[in-house]
Structure formats: C-alpha cells, structure tokens
Image (cartoon, rainbow, N blue to C red; front, side, top):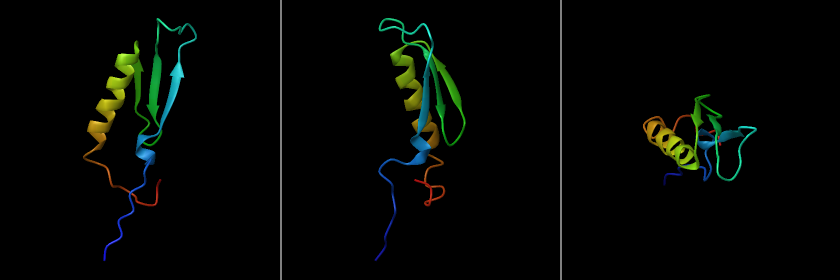
Length: 71
C-alpha cells in the first residue's frame, strides 16, 4: 500500500498579486510573484496575468514534487 501525499493547493502555486495604483476595470496591470521560486512577472492585462500563471505552471510541471512537507 502506498500513500502519496499530494496537497490540493501546493505552495509551488502560491502567488503575490500586486496591482498598479492606476489600475481600473479597463486597465488591469501589475505584477505577479511566485512565493516559492521568487519569479516575478509583469502584466498589462488580465489575459497577460492568466498567461503568466499558465506559463509558470507549465515551467514548474517538470520540477513539481519537490519537498512533500511543503504545502
């Protein structure tokens, strides 16, 4: 019997979202920082923000599984 601990919300996918001071519903801009890797990505629209997260998930998929004690 094998118990594999896979957290539902892994730390590798935790982010800090900072919006620019001039952000409004039509001008969504800021930066996104991965809490584990420290990688920071700027975005100028909601679409760019989502693309940054998607790119980070794809980049991290090969390194996932690191320390199982980190949730």
